[in-house]
Length: 416
Ligand SMILES: *[C@@H]1O[C@H](CO)[C@@H](O)[C@H](O)[C@H]1NC(C)=O
Ligand SMILES: *[C@@H]1O[C@H](CO)[C@@H](O)[C@H](O)[C@H]1NC(C)=O
Ligand SMILES: *[C@@H]1O[C@H](CO)[C@@H](O)[C@H](O)[C@H]1NC(C)=O
Ligand SMILES: *[C@@H]1O[C@H](CO)[C@@H](O)[C@H](O)[C@H]1NC(C)=O
Ligand SMILES: *[C@@H]1O[C@H](CO)[C@@H](O)[C@H](O)[C@H]1NC(C)=O
Ligand SMILES: *[C@@H]1O[C@H](CO)[C@@H](O)[C@H](O)[C@H]1NC(C)=O
Image 1 (cartoon, protein in one colour):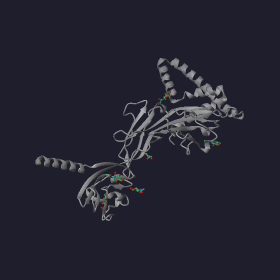
Image 2: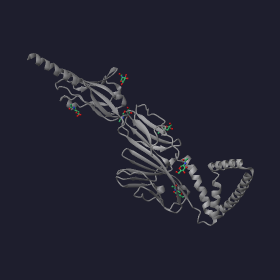
Image 3: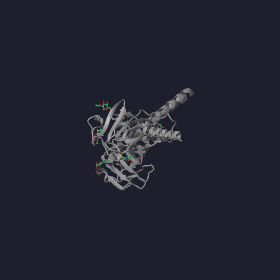
Image 4: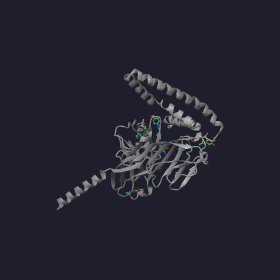
């Protein structure tokens, strides 16, 4: 009987020792305060030492003779620690650590001594800086996804909608750490082929794939508007129940309009007050009575909601400004007539060349067909096209040319 009793006691003691030796895991949010728990058998004459054990023993906080004793406290903890004084006599030696840093991570020992004897317990502290936002922009190199102040290092991945085979998108960089140990993401992928063919989706998550944030970018088809006619620029993204929507023009600040679905609050910048009044139900931007060239450019719709950001860019050009003005028709006519003449000359030349080709036989004919094909690919085909416009109506000729120019400047200038 006595032997079994002794055995049970031994086992109990062993379990007690195990429990006491087991580290209590604590996760703290970066720069915030957290409590490192420690309790002991209450009694008088408490001595408390909080230490950390990274190679050497570093004093975090000490307490005896009824007071904090901070003479030996390591400088990195200065002004950031305190005990719950009222609770010490109740056996609570928990430590409050404020403004936690990545360097605070590690194993902490809570040593207590009273008239009843000594106790030790351990806390293993992890510090986390969760993803707080993800931003995205179109740059000259492609689409860039950015996020800052994350710990531990996040996982970044890219995809497209519709999907492309994995490996098609070349993600350029790994997260980098700053002096505080926090990671930043700055990852760029190149655009594939046609701008409007794909949405580019960047996903930033914890190492284990949880806590995902997403940002996506899509360039939609160009829109052509007429001066004087109200134009709706759509923003084709699914709208969650709570979101903020922002419309910007050519990266200008302040934005044209911001809309908060939770408060129904809408802000329109002074510059746009007489052009823009309201969003449509669908989130489309209405440009009222557009009057000229300075409204031509890239419009960006940004919808941000819980952990998602969606960007849609649209290139909009306005034409037809000079249609009704009599005096302006003279200049285009002066341009159009020579263009028609030159085009006619070229057609005549082509016919002559063709005829010569027929005379020289089939070999030469093949060669000429190839040449024509090259010309089309090179864009020379536009010549006859614009001269046709010029012939039909004088006003549309300039319109036709304006159609071409902004498309080019669009390709180069969206990122700026
Ligand atoms: C304080 O702790 C840091 C590590 O956290 C150590 O490098 C430094 O030497 C310590 N300072 C003193 C005075 O012990
Ligand atoms: C000790 O006090 C702190 C601060 O009130 C509290 O967070 C902690 O849970 C207490 N610990 C115990 C074991 O009661
Ligand atoms: C928190 O600590 C950092 C250094 O780690 C310091 O720069 C910052 O001022 C501190 N913040 C507060 C509120 O004390
Ligand atoms: C991202 O990296 C590029 C160069 O790789 C740099 O030009 C750009 O400023 C960085 N952006 C941010 C927000 O750090
Ligand atoms: C881009 O898309 C348009 C229409 O979808 C198509 O006509 C054009 O050939 C495409 N260009 C390239 C380079 O894929
Ligand atoms: C466009 O130009 C007109 C006058 O020429 C000016 O009143 C308006 O503010 C401009 N709009 C923008 C968006 O710059």
